[in-house]
Image 1: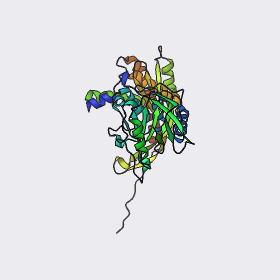
Image 2: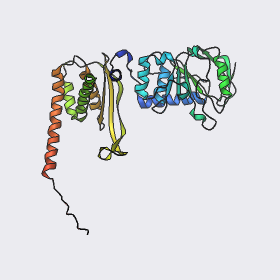
Image 3: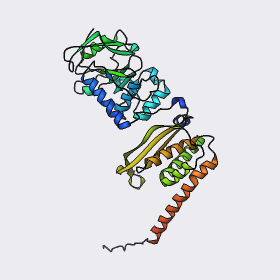
Image 4: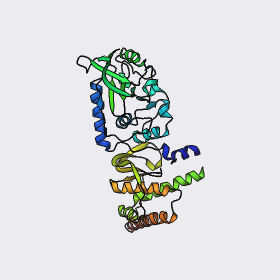
Length: 209
Length: 152
């Protein structure tokens, strides 16, 4: 108990939150609009600038999405690189007031600090046929996004086909995305982020490798 | 453990005092500072509603007493100490000053003279105000007593 009280009272600068959104209302609306835009047009690269710095290993876009969308009702699961960063954890807890879970199945939002480590999506909650909305949304940090023809996307929100190239993901990733799409209406929704951009891949999107 | 509890109790006390203080008292203390601390605003002052819950007589089922307006603010001094403030009403300036003072008072080397000069006048003002309202209540007090009605 003493340790817990001391931990709550701790004042080491390295483990403390930093400034969140500079204009909480307007920035949250702007971020929400960007995610909506990206989610409704899968594969579209949406830029998000003028964000405050984020505590490592979170990138600015990941942090801004969490601060805008996560609250006390949506548990976060994060991979070990984020979970062991005292500052990233206290930043999320302070600004979002969200519970942290050690089990990815319980997570409404899951954070992957480095896309090259992610090979499967089966560890996350895919919801049920009755409640597909209870699935996890997985935010994956990658090195770069470009509209080159590495893979082709089709599905709702895409007129014919959309090209996408992602740097810094595991080679098994696209197979996992294909398997995820087959679960429809169940499945996870993905948001790929860099320091200044994002791309969404909802479960409805089909990937041609 | 008692040591930690004392620390918390002290902090609760000054946070309470600053939340109940007249805004001018904090403003005066701020202008009176020779060296203003450098700080970063973690959570800008923001007003919101909270639900106050209570139990009748301190026991029994919890019920929602009503909503109240609360303004909160969090800052961090550049030496890493965090300060928080929650106060009734919507005075954002007071919330910000209270958060800064909360952080300053937590410093291990915070001079006692500063603590006294900040908190004592607030304590005195609050006591005086309480005293005045107590006397007003006492002066207009009416004692009732009820005759027991004979039912038999």
